[in-house]
Length: 269
Image 1: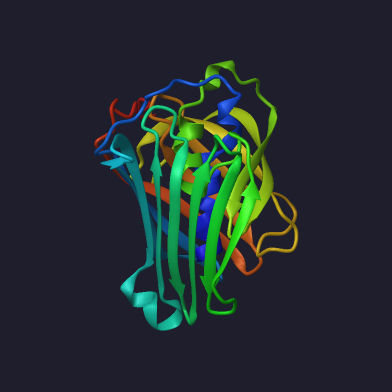
Image 2: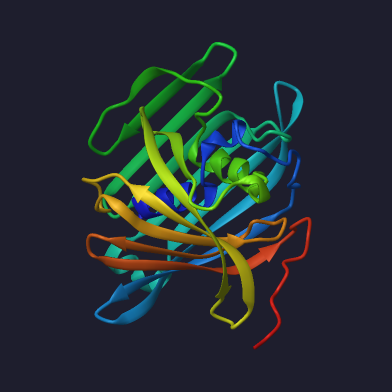
């Protein structure tokens, strides 16, 4: 689930190369919150296994206004006996560009736990990363970075601020993100617009993406992960589908509030 939650963050986030793509700055506001319900396919049955939420809060960093981006993912109580998940991800970012000052995650999945903290210094082109988990002792590493490299949470809002009207269909874009003490380069491909229905039957015109995963993880190499985000100004995630080594998962938007603009539904058929 931790890998799944991280991939969901990457997928919704799209590309950290939002720094070099056309963007609309200052697009989101404090108080926005959305929730995704996660379903796992088991022997042709879709089981509601858990959920993940994302929200924006006001805070300060070095006495300057900032946003605190916060995400939490959990398995539903009925699945805790099988595989208990309690994951949190958070980032403090500049409120206009969403570039991170600080990132932290604390995950607990089954018997495995993991903690990571990253402090970004773009002026020095460096990130200081502290990590420890159930299999590896505490360590501190220093990574060389550029403004295209962010964290899992800030990448979400950077992508959602991209002006997709200026991105051509079929374009393949890299996703450089710090995970643990390494920088990973994934890729995603913009596939154009497509109508998508939620589990409640509401339909939205969405932008569709395929994500190129890294071979050797729970995902096989190839474009095995697809997402749809609304084609309105919210760029809200409506549906995510992924094939994994032990089946497949889907995540549906189940709640959104505090968004600056209303979600635009398509007329009922």
